[in-house]
Image (cartoon, rainbow, N blue to C red):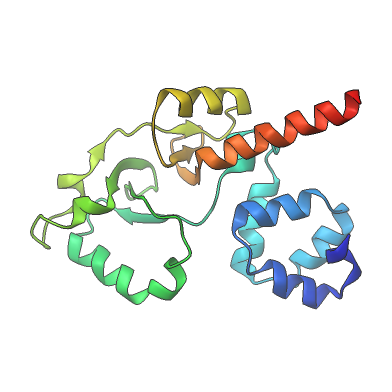
Length: 193
């Protein structure tokens, strides 16, 4: 309600600063018309990300994933990654970075790296040489209960989300899954009360 009570320009400026998962939560609580008018005033890239996330139901991996993650190509070297991290440090400093995701030339998920994997090999080493190949991933349509089971079974800080062609589309965090389960339980309890 508060977002809808301020000007569209002010709302867009505020919402542009939110992480993608929180942004989608706010938009999911708003009227569609208000959401669309704010999206037209937002940064083009941020608005496009939000539209993609809003296209998913809120109780599946696509609706819960974040768009702030680090992705590099298989033919990038460790030096390329380090240079990119340095150049973009202001942008990346608020990201929840535990892993780097590696994609091929078609943006299909190829591997994953832990941050510490960058520390010891020679800087000329290609990511394809040190990445964990064929990493665990979650399909964007995976439902909430399946996500919970996945994270109960695999002790990960996050998991890559892919579409049906294995294109990397986001990352889902176990905390986000647990928060959504709690929110749904609270709503169900309040309906029964």
